[in-house]
Image 1 (tube, protein in one colour):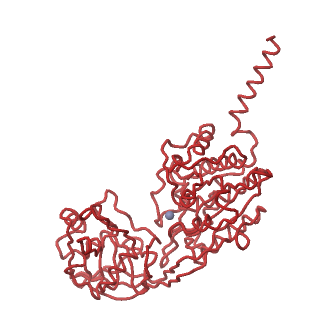
Image 2 (spheres, rainbow, N blue to C red):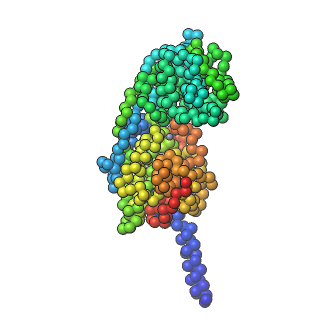
Length: 496
Ligand SMILES: [Zn+2]
């Protein structure tokens, strides 16, 4: 090899080397440059505003949020892929909780006013009523004589309010399963025994007892529309127990130790007033847009970039803004769509952008999407799910154990550009990825590590987010999706 060739070869290798290391850090990558913390945070702010009212499916606020997303897709010139324009409709249960919401404890005639958000919250599927009634403590609120355990044996709860643990025991009775512990199911058990309302208490002896969260997970059964369901603080529970000499923590300890009920009629009372209006079939919608792939063959294959738009709404004026969960992921989907368009990206495969409804109520929007995707779910090559990506300081990419090729692709991009992804991952999908995982669709679940400090609390506000981290996760998800859409990934077998 002469010296000129040597120079040529070394120039060539240098070029290849720099082309390789620069593949994700080109000076001008208009798509990437379009992703900024500023515009992401602007979208998060908008989605968290009181106008959108916590984005509960079925509500006016959710519809406005869906329209906001559809308008954005329209402005970008994306194809609509819903039943009607960008909207992909489904029906869900909906419960609107209005003011006033009253909870007072009465001990020896002394009344203490409960403050919503501090002393109590309402369950998403609370019923309505107004009364002042004695309270009965009923342990775990389980009535299973069939397996030899009944918290309702030996107490009379008729025309009273029961106070029960929200969760089920961590131990088993004769090695038998307790079944589910959803609030509506425990409420129906209490109602069957004659109670008029229910007060849920988090397990006090957990390392970190569950705070008073907004939640619309409710379980099976007919909605008891006249039956208030509250989640009260440990302090409020202790007030109601104050004449017994036991604290709520003592009660749990005694039941867990003996594995026997410790139910008791209390001399204290609760005053409750709740106004809710329930709809069994309220119409809501996913918002779906698409870029058609430019490769004649590969355009029949789809890459889905999705996030849930919904959150848990508001109750009697208490707003759950859901900034991290999941205004952050929703903003990401809109921002990535914009990056594809503004970056002039013409992917080989088709790309679907979807904002799901009703994740919080049990993945209803993503289930409906995968079941009714007209082109067939087997044509979906991969899904990128973005859920709670703005709080904390590092990135976790989930489902890597089920889709290792995809995971390695994202990891490689991360190593070259961000170095923010933590080592641990999981298998089995997770949240809106689960219905797709169950159809053997490979996928990644982007989430910020330790994301859940403010989970379902009124404090999940835009101010708590880390805008730089949010921007990096969105860029990483964008680059990963772009690579998959460009054909640099073949559908792998999902490892179950
Ligand atoms: Zn959530």
